[in-house]
Image: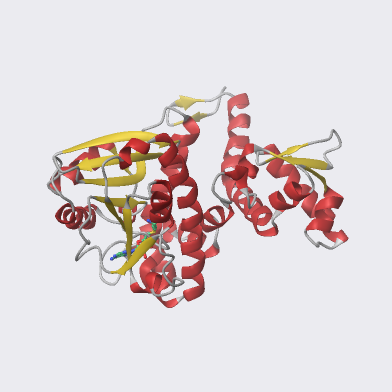
Length: 364
Ligand SMILES: C[S@@+](CC[C@H](N)C(=O)[O-])C[C@H]1O[C@@H](n2cnc3c(N)ncnc32)[C@H](O)[C@@H]1O
């Protein structure tokens, strides 16, 4: 007789298959950490330097690894090739080449916009992984008394912005990672949807970090005067102004400098609904009417926007991660619509442009 669970009967073959799937899910972190290992070592750059194909011996030499590490390096490469990050280039599994995925980790990535290695390392960095490890403990701790608002806060004793404010090295790592992601995303956004920037003479990149988005807009559309607004811990650490964009210290919860358009790239997913409405109200005060082409440009996830399983699943992992490390979350269209309406906006237009990301133009 087939084993039974809550009335459902599964065959032994199904259960055997299920046990493999269960183990596959449980070992997902080993894949993440093998990727972290390869990115930290610079494997993609090493293969690139060898002309696109490298043997394990080449990699040992390129990465200055001791010969005794060969079996482990072989295992890392074999596992990442099975996941499609690299590909085997010989039948004996001793040679590897880049795939489209690992080509994004090369410093002069496809001539597009630089490497995504820093952005990739952010997702697998211990300070961001640890709160995810603590998720069950945080859920069990409940919400009363001195309970931490997020698993990040429970793990680090402070929220993300507090930790970044007191740890300059982590702040530099975080800003560099976001900048690498932003260079790639903005390059795509400007190529795919240049019309979004039509008729705009000035733009404020709110919570713009080191200014990668504003720099991309200013380089592509020299007529647009671009300004970056962020916290003092970010703006004060930047090199003297590059002349391409202006940098302003400020708190977006209080004031957003006037401009034709406000850009919010990967900002609103850091904040609760109430905080988002507040930020959006400050943005609305900063822009002119819709007739005068005023708009807010949001670049973020719209949950469920893609028919592709890998995009949808990636969006759900990002959603869970945002819930874990911030007071924010990813949102579906209905949730976005409610935020825009509560902040007093009259209309919006969504364009999905980069797999898991969308551009949302929001009109006053
Ligand atoms: C996830 S990062 C996004 C940076 C940038 N938009 C990008 O995508 O590259 C969020 C940014 O919000 C900034 N931030 C947090 N609180 C802020 C506030 N109250 N006012 C202005 N910026 C703030 C952080 O310093 C950080 O640079």
